[in-house]
Structures are given as structure tokens and as C-alpha cells.
Image (cartoon, rainbow, N blue to C red; front, top):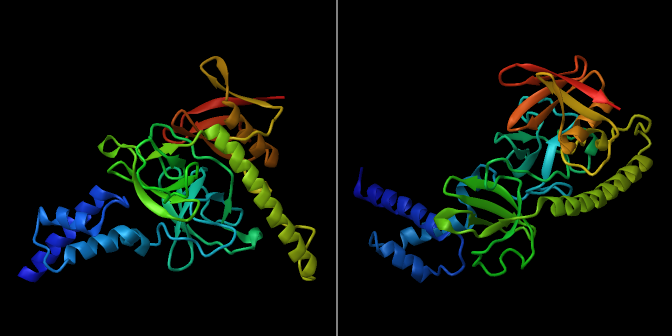
Length: 333
């Protein structure tokens, strides 16, 4: 390795270390960064300083892959919650029946989605053509099991916040679009600014999770307003297009199955363990009943007690996806 290449590699690694240390704090001036660099190397030509500026300001490595970049659509944005749409050909092998979060857009124009189980995939999306979408926007709040934070969570500034009004001001929401092993999270604020923040790193909490119940109500109201606008737009488009088939239009609501919903259902679903029948949690009960009403011979995937299950309506059994064991289920009107 030549001396020039060796110096570049040292500067490169040091720049990454400094970026991890300073996060995106506005208080870190070039002079402060220079002082940090001087503790390790003699950066005569500011090579390392330039790397720190470039990498920290643009999240360049992730952006190259299309992550954390704003979408070129009017009806879908970075951080939106989505589900597999009616025209997605991937089946349930990718999403496992769970919701996901939009985390970017690749060079081909496909939307990058991180499903709640952690897998990232790319999916076609055509703006304003809701009947052919491979993914569809939903109003589901991300819920946590053991994680302190996860992609899809809504957040506000936390107790250790020190970044001024870069989030848009007190009370402004943001969405987690990425997490790091160093106990940090990438957040896309509703004002479209993106930053990396500590969530337990060095014992600091720049972020605070939003109350899921209050947030669900607010997100539902926002979502309903958006859906009303989209439906009016679709009605006008179909009215003006004489070639449109109106009798068999695909309603996107047929494919929205919120896990947590305020919609009341009359039926009660139970599963039998040994000799005892146990009711499903209310949110899951709603999801099961809505799926059953759509196709009484079909099946649905649910998450319960940190385990994935497949409910077969035709056989009225609950199958553990991992070990293939089955329990009887029943529906009570």
C-alpha cells in the first residue's frame, strides 16, 4: 500500500468515527471538528474534514442505495406506512402479512419498503393510479415488542434534544426510517429534514416515542382526509374517461386491514389451548373478522405473543408458522 493510499484510508476511517461521535449536532463547527481530527492525525489539507462534511451532511452511503431519499410521488412519501397491494405478485413470502414503512426509492423508481419483520424490498408504484398499486398506504401505527425503537415509529424530540428547531419546532412529529446498531435512529421529520439521533447511545435520548393511542387517532383522521381527496380525484378521472370500466372498479379499502382499528365487530374469535378457549386480543380480533368477511374460505397471518400464526378459515385452525403445530379456532356471533 502506497503512502498516499494509506493516508486516505486512515482519513476515511477517522471521518467515519467522528461522524458517529458528533451525530448531526449543529454545534459542531469546522474548528471543533478540526480539533477532534488533530487528536489523531495531522490533516494539513483538510482532507479528513471534507470527508466528515460530505458524509455526515448527506448520509451518502445510504443515499447511493436509494435509502432515506424523498419519493417522486404526490400520494406517497418517505416514512409512510404501507401494506402489500392487490396487484403485488410477491404473495405473503416477503411481508409475512405485516405492514411496512417506506424508506426510500431506488434508481429504477421502485419504492423501498422495510417490512415490520426487518426485510427490505422494492415495489412498483404509479402515482395517482390507485387501482394498480403493488403497495398501498395504510394508517397503522408501528407497535413495538422488545425493541426500544424501530423503523416506522413516530417520534418527537426527547429529553436530551440539542438541535434547535431543525425538527420543525416543539411538538413536530418525525418518522424513524432507519436504525443503527450504535443505538441511533435515522428520522425523517414532517418538514422533510432528515437526521441521525441518539436513542440510548451514551445514555442519551434525543428522541421520544409518541403515545400510540393518541397518535393512532390523529393518523386516522389525516389518513381519512387523504383518502377522501384521492377518491374524489378517482371519481373525476373515471367520469372524464369514456373508456374506463366503472362497474368493476377496484376499491383500495378492500385491501386495508388495520391491525389496530376503532371499527367495532360483532363476532368474537377464540383459539383452544388444551381444553380452554381463549379470546384473541381486540385488535387482532378485528383483523381476523374483517379478513373472514372478505373470504370465508381464505386465511390470514397474525402476530401474537411474538409468534407468527396462520389462521385457515376453511379448516378453522391456527397454525404456528415456525413449528407447524395447530390449534382449533372458532367464531362466536
